[in-house]
Image (spheres, rainbow, N blue to C red):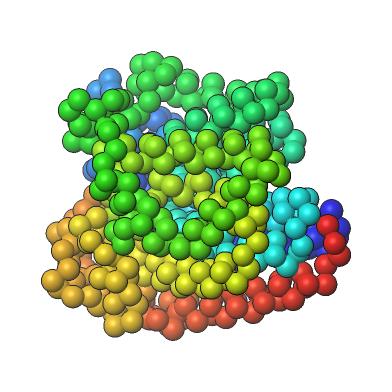
Length: 466
């Protein structure tokens, strides 16, 4: 790999990380439960979140204790910066944990994709273009601003697919499973593809740690937090309490619907369907592994009794497979179509990150009924159905409108509207200078993206052949 390519890969990482770091989405049940586990590990040296359980509804019960109903890997990782920082300001601590354990991991995706593309013989300009689009014009962008597992597990699963050092690929896959239970299928597919001892040895310590955690908390090495989750999340007669037969509503809902459609919120991903066949011909086993991972995540999402993902933008359970679509876009070689849809997709996902990537699950068309009106006008129609006490009267501003803090289960339960805690639980780095919710706060990061992306494309034109 040439020095020029290495520099381009670094610039892609730095631009992506800086963009993700500009935004912080704030609290919510999902991230609150993981922050609670992080705090319990560091502050109380336990996995039980009993003292913090009133901060979230995403809980499990076992042995007289309350636990986070999530895979623990992200909280384990976040315990390191949290233990070092311990600023006393929960929002600061949560932002730093999100920055180092979510944004940092996900920002590696465009660099990995660029290196992969160059190794496969794609020219530098096309490689850089697809890498930028994958990072900034898909749901990887808004979900990299939230303390959730979807974006970092996407980076880890992608690393497991493309990394040539199989022991390192095993480490990535194993860590991904500790963060996101759904990644276990991907780990198995990749292990079958490789059948390498190094891959298994890399993954094993993380799988053993996860099994030990489950034994300590839930009584069995193979008893996950989902098995002990709050009964309100379980469906009668469903496999494992959560899996049912797919419906048209769930299939359309997570693909093309304006409610949660992954292709609605990132239409550029449709270009991938022009490239899968070419990828198959070029690297059949690799492509088959990626398709199996995609199929596994899709099958779970459409069968899950909570397929819509609660308060979220688009199909959040499909975020981990987005980088695989990026490879297929490479092979599609449809430059004009990719760029046109990429610009549209970037606009959508930039708005979601800037305004609120966690709209109420009751809003049928969150982009047009909630995100866009807020960004343009600073408010949205009172007729839009929204979960109380969320309301059009209290969720105002052009940017960073989420008011739910990390220490309350329902908005304004502990912090009234207008208090610093509720106003600054979500923010972007421009708001301390322009004011909370001021649309001008996103101008610096927009300029950074335009200037830096243009410079990367120009530099890539002068790169040598792969």
